Length: 410
Image: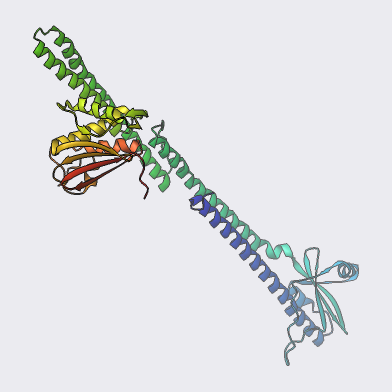
């Protein structure tokens, strides 16, 4: 069991409380038993002194002390079979001028009763305490049992109240994986159940928002794809070759942008499933150039180098980084060295903290005004899916964005 778990700590607390209660209860019962034995010794002193003043059995005193004289065969049977009381205290020392203890006394346990045997030259009495051992200890024993039962009930209630935490942890993991199908609400009023209900209500609301968002985006792409497809068909009817070529280029670019927007939507909503394969870096550079409709190729030292990545999403990474280099700098380059890719351009350094550029829709003093602030955010998200790292420096008047194809060793 996890030592940091609340259930582990609750179990330890319950065991400690139960042991402490049992030890305390046993100590109290032992104290009561010893006190009762001492009281019997004091009673024997009173009886002996009363008998010394009047050589007859002090019947009234015995009644008052709730004691009884045992005689005859019963007396012989008790003396023969009784067991010495291990809790019997030694008689207190004699005090001058006070009550005197008999010369010989003994405490016996027999058949659930305590017996006091007083022997003197003029006295041989066997006295029974009319109260049984069960009568003396029934009240503290009942109290002990009630306390133990209360601890058990409280433990069960607390454990029952904490059980929703395990279900909530499981459902949170399922929600993160997109597999939570039901959102069970509870009628309980404890704080943990209320927290769980808040989570389920929020998850249900987010699911409805996500479903409506997906429906909106699908309808949007459908509505946009329809005129693009029709436009590409209509270009075939154009007789002017120059106009036809321009229209084909425009509609092809629109179709390409729609596909890219669809992939970006999946990436940003964390619904994109990457499919890695061994691909040439040069193919990614060419694909990025096609997406950007570059008139001239980007300068690069890449030849036959390969990486294992998802072509569709990684091409967006190359497209965004090359687009930044072309828009905000000069002399764009893509260089490869020692399992690292460098996207370099000459220009002014980024203003503000680089981490701000990795946040979506978060304009800051360092953001440029063009675009929606998604370019570098999408780059960082795709590289994170590929378990690659991303960094930026400005050196010798150049902006250098670095992709570490392997994780850096610190």
